[in-house]
Image 1: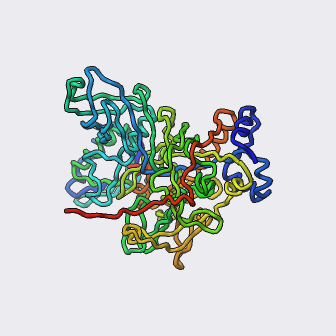
Image 2: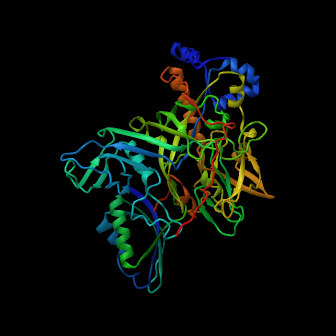
Length: 400
Length: 135
């Protein structure tokens, strides 16, 4: 048994033993969880994939004369922001699109530029065009402003993502006769390919399946900087189906995360365009898992071949909320590049970069080893599988 | 500077005009003729490698189009912007010829230009838009 306090003492003294989740898999396989837990203090995880429910908020500073953008309108590089705050606070969502984007008018739309791309450019240090219109008041008389802004000059710039880091996700296929375009990519007809989106054995919540160490207040790697888990993410669903090994085999827990955008790096926040679907932000997240005991180590050491995802049809079942799985498949099989579904060999594609997930786990490991990153105690737990907390469908009460 | 291989289709009304001369004179482009089949009163076809500034090249293509010359990039012209590629691997399940393959050892997505048939499926589905037609 170890405490986070003890681990932080070791970090301070430069004596901490940190390994990545990939190394944890090998170590547990070789020495068993008990021995490994005695040798290791921290396991670092990582994930890098499109996470649509991401956003950034900004306080741009007051101009002379003053303007109250709240209740007015504001674009950043022609992408509309949310303005329902006070005078100069704005929020930009990752999936927001310029008003004149053709969207899916000519199907499948290309969605070349949106909120996520603006966030990426700001983090890359580029000037971005801000254009805002207001109705004018006695205290905020100005009605229009057009100015370039730069991240380094404005007051606050905060990444605040209300749902990131899904604990497991679907394998998407298409049972229909025509190609479909989804947030899981282009899916060829008659199970022509299978796309998935998870870092598998590197993914944070898959390595702490019952949220024993990851909770509200947990300090993390976020977008190349430092962030915190601020809450359970939206659609957090801890009671989702689990296999006998305790690991969910469908999308389950999620995290809401927050961090200083000014300290993040463009490599880890990348605007992406999903053909026929829309814009999203690929976010890099790494969570350190303190090895408190043998059980934590056992979970952190679970390999790809013991983590399973469910195969879901995105032509009919997914859009119509029909909960039907076409079977389960392990991440080891998915990562092999080819799987067999209903007797057919199918190529697999991951939307989540394993290469970058590992780079994140490695970088977080080096931060901790150098003493630059101490672990935090969580201040409250995430709702777990016994909490009764769940994700429900909307009960519609239509009106005319 | 850009260097690009393009295929030009001349309608028979144009084969007697000094179009390539204009590419040099007006747009400062160097050219290297890779293939040519131009006969009087017949449709002409020419494969050119053009070298020059991006701006001049774009202007030259506009000029060719305005003249009525159909242009298309030579196949095997899909390139990857290494700075944009995140090595996610969603292209791997879509590429029909296995030109995009993930290396299980280091998780990198490798692009084999020799296998590429320039179907351009990857160009549109690549989330960070790292695959480009070099035309």
